[in-house]
Length: 169
View 1: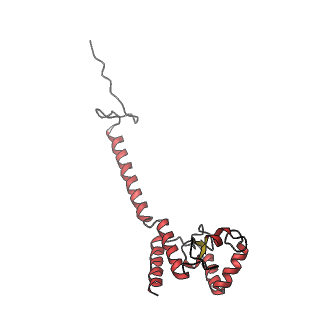
View 2: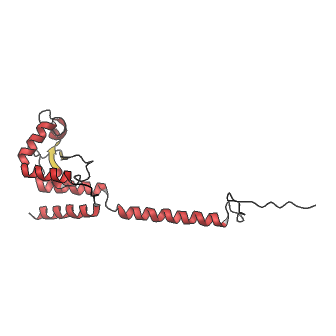
View 3: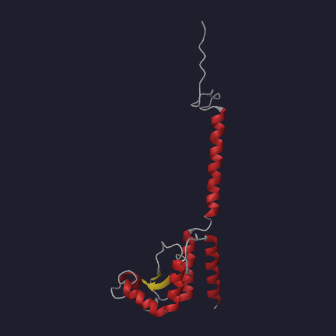
């Protein structure tokens, strides 16, 4: 009696390796794909070496050192927040130190007469008077700049420089 020999085939139609689910070519292809994936992950990590959280923390520290660590409206030093004059979603200005305004929680969110969020028109008038036309012109000009993608490493260097210079004074 003759025994039937069945050759097990891979999905690609080639003979599987003994004890494996795939043929040699498919295994090599999978290994190459894994290596490519790891290389992409390494490259991505190198590109985004400086995290957004790190830049946010440096920016807050720089704003406090440049503009003081008390509310720019009432002078209170408890429950301090740093408000973005132009939204955080505006990447050109997110970590631009003059875009930061030091406020207590009351004037950031809760006061109905002058608050960055509850009474924005009054707040804008106040901060423009306090910081002056030159500040307002600088921040508007920066906001209107076109195109450039934010270089996080360069931004970190700038923020560290601002912190170092403000700390020396």
